[in-house]
Image (cartoon, rainbow over all chains, first blue to last red; front, side):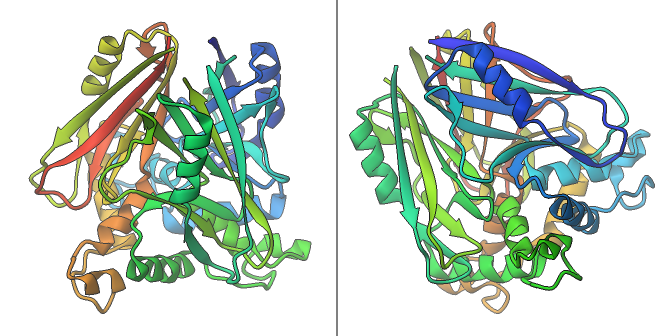
Length: 140
Length: 140
Length: 140
């Protein structure tokens, strides 16, 4: 069995932002030498997501508005008890649960086995600092 | 290591509909010959989900009503910027994030290692056309 | 390829409650002997979740309030058709979809390959009875 591990680092300039990381994951897969197996891609931080959806800026704008409605940013400790710790990112912990921590992608004949529009995104909900994603690939 | 891949195709008659695909996934597992491993089942389209829950029609009716409240169908470009592309399915991209893209199921002694009520569903949010699910099984 | 399976049993005293199960999963990993691979942890019940987030009581209080807003407990069959079956837990089936069924964690050098604050939680939404989580580890 082959096993491969890589960290991808990001420092996104906005609090909430989505970045297409498909090319970086494809490079990991090439480097791994795995032809058949599974590829796990997960946020290593609990205020960020990895998810698969469409690379369309209008949709990303919709997602941001929708997530802000479902879990508004509010640094005060009145809305979110978490912010009594001195943090201001309780909303980010909620947004991440909607969008998910991780994706698992099939690897077939050395490629990410994707449908026509699937792209992998890093979803940042508490940015403006260095954070990272883990890519782990197993197979043969 | 054994590796198995199969696509399941659907053309559901409603815009939003849930289909129990457990028997099809079980057939894939039998065909794979895998006795111990992991089984990934994912939507290959970004307006559809694969999820595990109860095969109870009342619950599915509840899910549809709830998802419609959380992300209403609205083809206009006023509510959803995504629909400025000429598409009308922005709501489906949102519903899919709530219900998830994929499930990973343990394979033990040649069976899907399920609790008493777990069933796998294809969740369609923009139907009335051919779409597909990927089943990838690795193990030995 | 190594393969390991274990069930973790819980009987939480509240209807909705979160339990940090990271130590139990770490023990499973040690017992498995796997050094490189993937670790699947999933709820075996469809009214419960396994998720990764912060071990901070204020945040857990926020999650409970938020989930109750998104899918309120209501045993009546007026709000939820599912409760026409005689059950009162339709809300729990909804809350579980927000928080997710499962996590897949990379195993690297015999450890759960975690970022600085990642912890695994069992999320109970219809407690006060015995329920279980499956841990499945594959690798070598």
